[in-house]
Length: 208
Length: 170
Image (cartoon, rainbow over the protein chains, first blue to last red):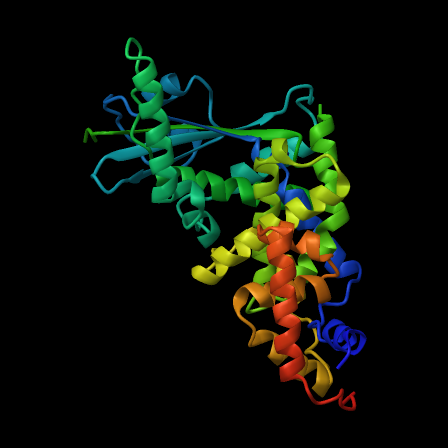
């Protein structure tokens, strides 16, 4: 068999691919857009871990967030959530939707995002597998973070970083909420880059 | 404000997205997993944006090398599903079944029987349309190694495909 025949047969043996059309292109566009750093930049997550006893009043709305938590957060959350972690500590967190810099307070995207957040029930919100099993919450990511902090502390013995214990459950819930908000806002044809989600939380020994 | 680097990478991704998907579709099993690997490819590309070649061809090779490496990892472990790729996954799952003729299936099987290094080069050249030099770049081997591997692959395929092309089924 000469090269030409062999090449023709090899070229013709390529497995077929999904026909390109409007629907596939739209799905492809979603993947391209979602990968942009901008989509991951609008979430800010602060975690604290001082052993300040927090009296929890229960509930999942901002109205029930305790004063110490509000004081610690430094902002008034639209929503707050709580859970008991594996160590038996009670973890609380507050979340607020904020307009991005230069975006007006009456921006439709921002207002829509705030409405969606207010409607989320964190008690029943499910954490998708892609978040729960994602790299951000993997032992590998924890190891990278620990190594990075150790490296910094080694270079700055005079002012070492003492990171707070993480609260992955709250963080994952907030990640899940962010996805819900972005999906809902974009389904209304609005720009999900107009707002950010800011959250803070802490885990403390419970005071009953 | 987006930087020139970001605009460049965005354009590079858009220009190659469909071909990258085709590349992954032909190799992912099940095919719908291509959506997840494609999503990861773009995320990794953005994380390494500062390393993206400014030349369009070199940039294309760079993206395919990222996709190829992720695909290798996929074969080693179960892929974590990406929510952002759900819609694309559905589209791929609804894709009609192959209607390839008997000869295409026979050739594909012969290619599948090649040792991994030979097989990969052959597929990149004949399925994806890369030159041998480009395929070498994507797989991280020297051009001379690629040439000798490709020659060996052709020799093996000639021996395996002694039968002339058969009539198409379709």
